[in-house]
Image (cartoon, rainbow, N blue to C red):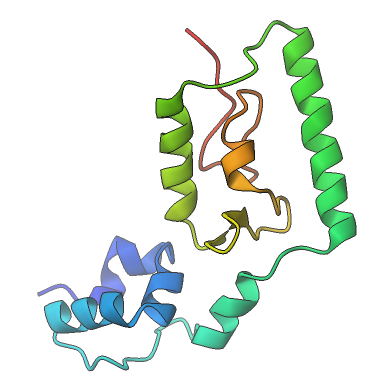
Length: 141
C-alpha cells in the first residue's frame, strides 16, 4: 500500500492547512492510511507555521497589489474585455480559492503576499486573476 507521504496530495502540499488544522480531516487520513491521529508532517509543517501562512500581507503590500490589479483590469477593459464573469465562473474560482492553503475563511480572504484580496469581490471580475495561477483572467469565447 502506498504511504500517504508518497501521494500527490501530500507531496503537493495543497492540503497542509486541512492536515494541520482540521482534526476531522486529519483523523480521516490517519484512519485510511493506518497512522496515529496526531502524526507529524513529513515536511515539518506545524499548526503554528500554517497559521503564519494565513496572516494577511502588510497593508502597503496589499495596496500595491490592488493598484497592480486595477491597472491590469483597466487595460483589459480598454481592450474590450468583459467586466463581470458568469456566476458559474465565479463559483468555480471561489471553489479553487477555498481549496488553497492561502485561503482564510474569515472574510473570504487570500493571504498570499501577492494578493490579500476579498475573494468574493475579486472572483466576480473578469480581468482579475490568481497571483499563483489557480485561475486566470476570464475571456468570453
